[in-house]
Length: 338
Image 1 (tube, rainbow, N blue to C red):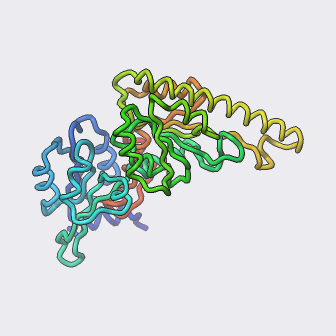
Image 2: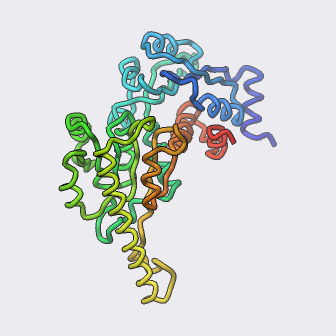
Image 3: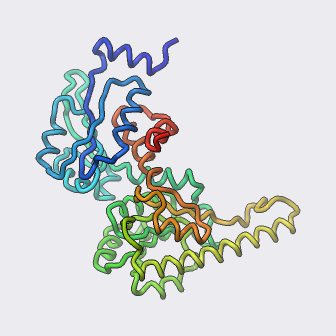
């Protein structure tokens, strides 16, 4: 019996599945592993498509690319995630809230095959959420028993909005955003409705907010540039958060141990006390270990490199492109070069 991939290869050979072109749009994109991942997945699933890079910041070039007859879809990266939105016919609800598009999907007429509309999606938030879950992050466990599990977004960079959306989808609340520039921070926080429970942490005045926190965040997403040292003020606030989280984790583990003695079972077996797993996802890809990751790891946090989020968002992109959910392990191996 033929596999689904073999059937698609046969249909491609006889022209029943036309070959389409997919692209990565943005600049710089020369070092991106996206083409390797998507082309690997096309081959794995038996599709005749090809994915390539278009290094550009020009919306006219983008317009020509996405309106070509054989256009199959596109990934969008900086600096075009906002610029492409007016070029599209429809923006998916999640992308509208996040305010950025990283995936363009053409919807074709079933009979004529002509594109009827272009839809913009955002899968960055899905990649973030998947990476955090894979690392063991969960809003079920707070750093302080009886308190809701909160989260932290470090910086107000390009993926901070997707990070807030992802953390909200995972039911973390509140979501604190640490930033250096009050105007940028307040604009970001104010753009989300009250249901997201986004709270501003200004670097210069974070002390009072930290003192009032019932429980410090157990999950963090870094969106600051990794090619330079962390701002001194931001580093000081992060150290205070990481140090307090370390103390609260130690206290929680001690409570779990004591509970074990009382019930005569395994740690946390009664379900009332369990230490929260502290996870930092770094959205920057290079270097492999950033200053933020080192700082978190020094305080006992699990750190996840940005390449994991790239895999996650790419898997969801591929599903938007083709309707096929690819094997995560295949996509990850292609991105990691293994």
